[in-house]
Amino acid sequence: TLGLTSDRTLFLGAAGAGVGVDDAGDWRNRNPDVLRYSMTAPGDFIELVQGIPGGPHGADPDEMDGVIRLGTGNYDDGRPVVGWDAHSGMLNRPSDSWRTILGIITGDSPFVRAAG
Picture 1 (spheres, helix red, strand yellow):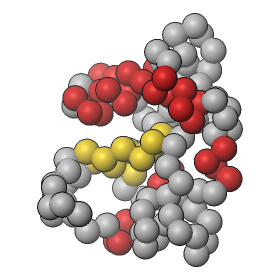
Picture 2 (cartoon, helix red, strand yellow):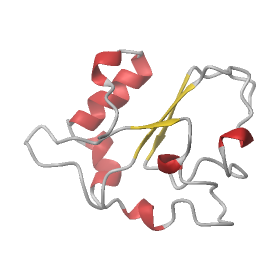
Picture 3 (cartoon, rainbow, N blue to C red):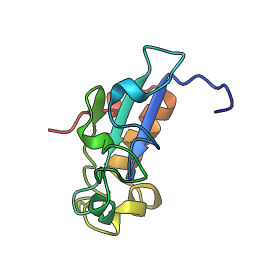
Picture 4 (cartoon, rainbow, N blue to C red):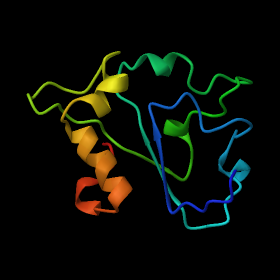
């Protein structure tokens, strides 16, 4: 790392939680209060490689303790943010997921809603 300290971390369509990260105890943070979020669209192709045991990307952040799972919601045209196109569509088209990402970056909590 470059010595930066994070207060919020978002795993967005992530293949894993990081090289060598198999559980929350493997993170090395100077900030013990960092908030961790994860967002993966249902049907995103990245699900095929998330959390492969012994894999190069680490554990599946969507399933890790201490990580808040976020829903992807809908695009502004009403269609759900799902499928292979959603991997980049979460950022490329106006959507609930885009506003959630923005809310995490800016700390605007009304836009940040846990999945479920």
